[in-house]
Image (spheres, rainbow, N blue to C red):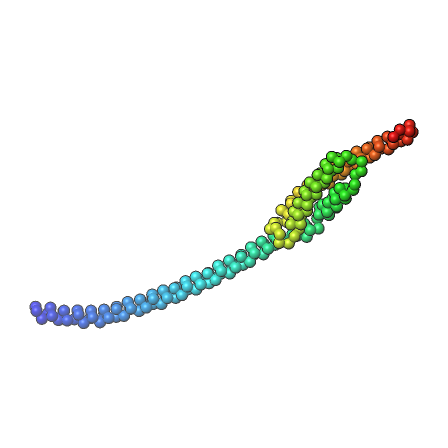
Length: 199
C-alpha cells in the first residue's frame, strides 16, 4: 500500500510539473500580448491627445485671428458711413451757421449786440463739439464701433446740427429784421427832422 502511494505521488508531480510549465508559458504569452495591446492603445491615446491639443491650439489661433480681425475692423469706418449724404449736410450747415453769425448787425443797442455775441459763441462751441464727434466717428482708429453704431451716431449729429442750423437761421433773421426796423425808424426820424427842420 505504501508503494502505490509513492508511485501515484511521483506520477502526479511529474505530469503536473510539466503541465504547469506550459500553463505558465501560456500565461506569460497572454500577459505579453496584453502588454503589447495596452502599449499600442497607450500610443494611440498619446497621439490623440497630442493631435487633439495641436488641433485645439490651431482652433484657438484661428479664433484669435478672427477676433483680432473683427476688432480691428471696428476701428475702421466703412464706405457706407464715409460716403453718407448726412456728412455733407452737416458740413454745409456748419458753414452756413458760421456765415450767418459772421455778418454785422447795425442798428442794435450795445446790450443787444452783446446778446448776439453770447448766442453766437454758445452756438459755435456746441457746433465745434458736434464736429469733433463727427471727426472721431469718421477717423480710423479713433472709435471702436460697428458701421450700424456709427450710422446711428451720425444720424444723431445730423439731427443736432440741423436743429442748430434752423435755430441760427431763425435767430439771425429775427436780428436782421430788428436791425432793419431800427434803421428804418432812424431814417424816418431823420426824414421828419429834415422836413420840419428840427435837429
